[in-house]
Image 1: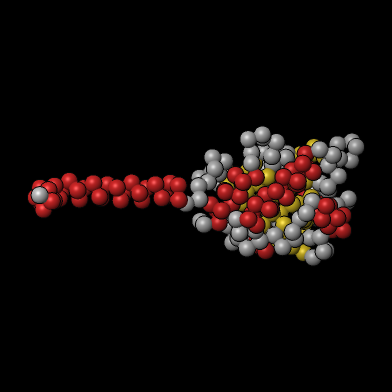
Image 2 (image 1 turned 180 degrees about the horizontal axis):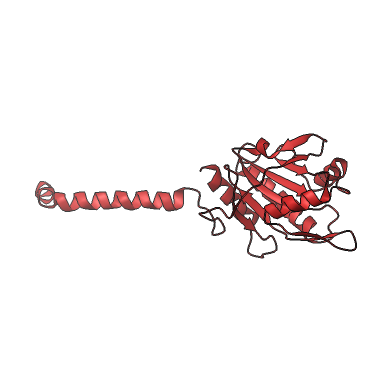
Length: 210
């Protein structure tokens, strides 16, 4: 009986096996691999401008030092009374998740750039970074020497900066995601209640595989 069944139905069984294999393969691609979030754009929204700045140890750091890595870039100033400390605290959670997902420093870096060089000296930034639990192996805090030049650099990264009459700054508060080729792939508004630090790390992992 069994032999008769297979003899009569081998074609149907074969087709079923092939279809199941195709479905399994599709399901793996859809769910088994790291999926990017809806924030990540298929096409770049801009090109990351080159720079040469100074780190917390007073050493020169160039944008080329981050070549072939995914970067999170955040423009800020340490004396900011509101959004900057909140966003930097958020980035410390991103840092921890990057470590948990094994992409921190090896495959991706966080780069926080101050546009307030008069106050944000290397020593001041180092103190600020330590307060925010920054691991300097993969989270760099950088500053420049010229305020106007820093504002121009920020503008090239889609960040507007305006100095007010108190000496503080009004600025666009976004975190930019730059791929290994130096293309800005998206930007995150850390003020959005639906933005989770794990979402950002998911996108970092996705870009690290490109």
